[in-house]
Length: 321
Image (cartoon, rainbow, N blue to C red; front, side, top):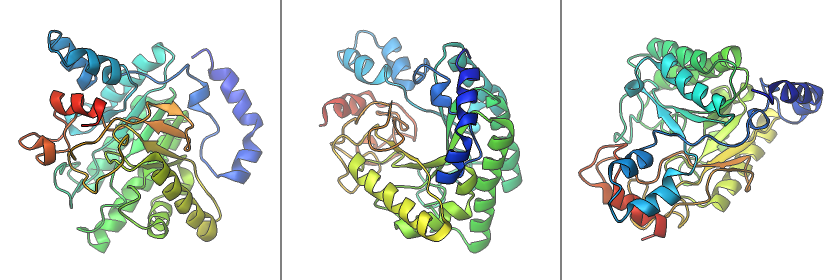
């Protein structure tokens, strides 16, 4: 709160240059309006440590996972969405910290992968949901990662559904621009092993990237930061060549410490990466997928459900085995 006026004045002074370099709907910089990233007090690792203080794995999970700022995911499980997002960003704002939120409720979500299938019941239901999401955030500083996998996961959609998805994403960006002026919104761009940079640049642009702050990479995957940086730069090269602009990007480093072994779903032998921070080769390195939370009934998480906290997986991920 106390940094807000100073940040807005500085941002307005720099506006012409910012528009020339990278068109954006926002002048405010939420990172300068806060004193660091918010640690979710109800994160799954924190809850597990509190419930299992005598477990031999608890000290490591507490030190290396529970205290690291990690994104909070919001979907149909979140209840009244405007109330949920409002409470979360309000708590962060009261401690002068920057919250990272993931909107994960798009119509036909994960229609190809299937492990996290679900989402809103229709495009219009999603439009209502995301409008309430943005309204809950309001004018408080925040970072929002918009619908992981949604622009890479086209393989099971027909052309009508693809156009609907593009409209849902661009409509979401418009809602944040209208209702949440101090939020940086990132459209998700998959990961380096999924979609070519040229194709992803077109999908991002068609879904309204020009009006968003940037794009996100590697959410819930394991590719190294260097691989993601190279891919992000390649996407920006395509954006510049085709559309005349570039955008900043962020990388999910929560589970990329050992890189990828080619598997994405509860892959064995992965390791936590660089903790949440500004910079590091991208605009931010963020823990988006909470280490230890299952990707679904697969890999080392066989028998689990997506989002379930698995303490043994979490513990092994700290040490990379």
